[in-house]
Image (cartoon, rainbow, N blue to C red):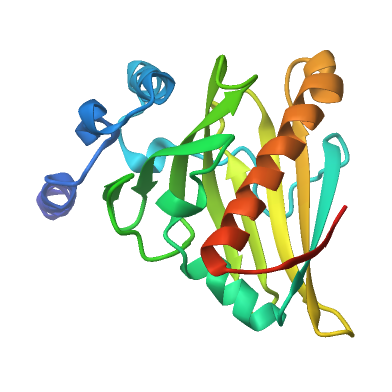
Amino acid sequence: MVALKCVVLISLLCFQIQSFGQLMLDDIKPGQIQQRKIRKYIKCLIEEDKHQFGEIHPSWNRGKDLSSYSEIENTYILEGNSNDIWHGYISENPSKSWNGRKVSFGVLVQKFPGAIYYDHDQINGVDTGQVYFLNLKLLLGICNIPVAFEMITVDTAEKVIEFSYIEENKSTGVQQIKFMDMDDGHTKILHTSHYRSDSRFRDKWIYPFFHKKIVNDFHRNMRKLLNLKTVKIK
């Protein structure tokens, strides 16, 4: 019994040592985030007693049924082979990738190992466990909506990126970006979104309209950063 108590005490001590010094949401510096709505969003998460990065969870994981979600597909056909375009997308600094006309980058949290990146920091590409806090600029910037998602898949073999809205987001679900070679030497990018919220009106009328603009803005920004030429968008 004494030996068992010693093991438990040692385990607790090791956990405390490991936890000490780990970054938390409380360590995010609001003064380095330009967007007021993102600062408020993060403050709300902390007030809901979410402090550790590991307490942030995606609203969807691979294998979960998507039949109850609405779906939108956007297709982009670009000049160049899929390997080069794929590597360009996953290697670009996300603070630049997600800074366009309709969306702006606020802060990125890397779950493992724990790290915090602001819009002026160098981020070495896309990786699983990254949580992005972004600001959506709608109606010419009159309406600003904070959104957060976690990168859950970066599959080099299949050339697939997947990211899921976190559980506290107004919309839940997943977006997938898949890169495919075409016979004529071009690359097809298929951006598929599965989403739902607690409002049927929002899901049917509001989300699709603004979502298309934001997705187009992201891919337009990537084409500009990577100096890619568009063949067709549909």
